[in-house]
Image (tube, rainbow, N blue to C red; front, side):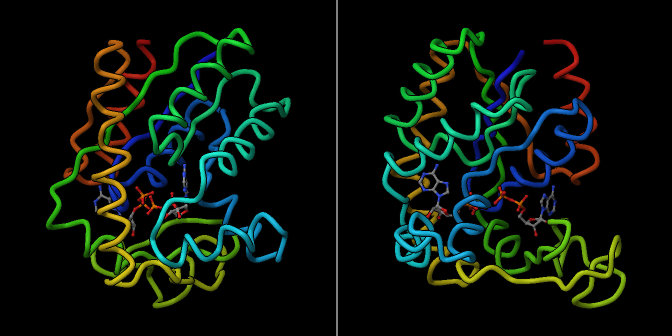
Length: 216
Ligand code: ADP
Ligand code: ADP
């Protein structure tokens, strides 16, 4: 039973690596960003309320995301472990995770911090495309699909996220620096931090990460 937390700036590769780790260990990837986008797409009240913050590149209120995570983690497929992708993002959320894991008698979490040089984040984010069917993540610069705009796996249409534009990206990077980066020190102080060099190619990162996670 392990709770994994993926930390890293927008575009660091959290989603890409979480998909690989999820497959390797058969544990679910819980992405607050994906859940919020899906709720907005379905015009669910929670999604509609979060939409303005997401479009502005600001964080959604703690109560909203904590509620989402608590509900999702309560589902049976999370009993063996899970990956929190993009959560926690504030100190209040990190403390909420501590309380939630204790309540559920889970052990301590392990935070995986994916570090990437800031100058490449912009290109990763503006180049990101995601399959509308299977969620596979592409990049028009670094990992393009064989046929433009189409998923290699299932032919699904590739979409660009509304917040992956330069102005919103700047806001998201600022929110990361101000509100999320302090979590690195939080987990380091508890000896629960594993650092990953996210500048390498995705396959090399995934191989090293899976190998490391088999030892913990
Ligand atoms: P990225 O891939 O850039 O890391 P995400 O998909 O994780 O982005 O998040 C997209 C947006 O969803 C964020 O900019 C924020 O508005 C909202 N969001 C996602 N997770 C959280 C969270 N844990 N706390 C607050 N807002 C969140
Ligand atoms: P995050 O979830 O941290 O915002 P993603 O996993 O969605 O990041 O990756 C952001 C973009 O960068 C995507 O287009 C993805 O294909 C690309 N990417 C992810 N990891 C790497 C890597 N190691 N090298 C080059 N590009 C990458």
